[in-house]
Length: 315
Image (cartoon, one colour):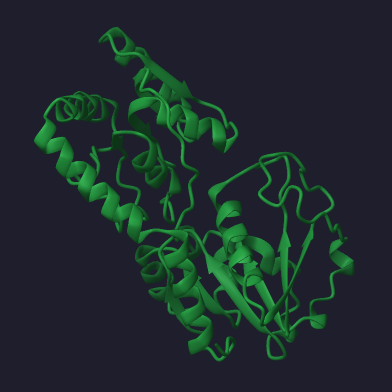
C-alpha cells in the first residue's frame, strides 16, 4: 500500500471554506481505495467544531517542524501547503497539487511561486487550468477535474421569496436586501459566515437564491452557485470566471453584471420565470443535467483515471 499524507490548516481565522470541503472530498476519494494508506495531520491551531469536515474522524495534531514528509510515498497539497514541503524531496515522492483558484496564476500571489515545484496538478475548472498553463511556469502535468459536490437531500416549503448569500460582499448584500424588501419581497440575507447547513436551509426555503462571489478576485469554481441550483428554484449569480463551466445565463441560472441594478432586474426576471410554467420547466431540466454532471461520483471516477494515467493507481 502507498502511504499518502494530507496536511491541513483549518483555523478560526478563515473558518470553513469551499476549499476545505474540496480537499476533504479528495481525501475521502483516496480513503475509499484499498491501494492507499491515508494519513492526515492538522496544525496546532486547528478549529474543531461542526464546520470542520473532518470533525469526529481524525484529530492528529503535529508541529510543522515535526512533519516528516519523507516517510510517505504521496503528498497531497493544496493552497499554501507547499510552505511546509522541502523542495529537495520532490524527486523522491509523488506530489499531487489541487489548484482551486485562478489567483495561483497571479505573480503577486504567494501561490504563484509554487508553480515551478514538481507535481501532478489538478485544476477544479478549465478556467483555472488555462490560467496556470498560460504562466508557462508549471512543472508537471495539468489535469482538469470539474468540481463535484454531494449535497444532502432537504425538503421544506418555500416560505421566502429570495435568499441572498452575501458574506463575500456584505455591503452589496445589504443594499440588495433593503431594495428587494421595499419592492415587497420576503427576503433573508447572510452577511457573515454561517454553518453550511444553515446556508442550505436558507436556500431550500427560498424560491430564488442570489449568491455573490468574491468581487476583488476571480473564483476557481464557486460551489455556492451549484448549491443554489440544488436547493432553490432559481439561481442568480454574476460571472466570476470559475463558474463558466456550469453556469449558463438564461438556461440554468441568470448571470447579471456584478452591479446592484442588474442583479435587481435579474431578480424580477427570475420571479417572472417562476410564474411561466413551460419556461421554468426547461430551467429545471437544464439545472438537473448540470447537477448530475457535477456529482461527487463523477469527480471520483475522473480522479482515479488521472491516478491510473500517472501510474499511481493499478486498478
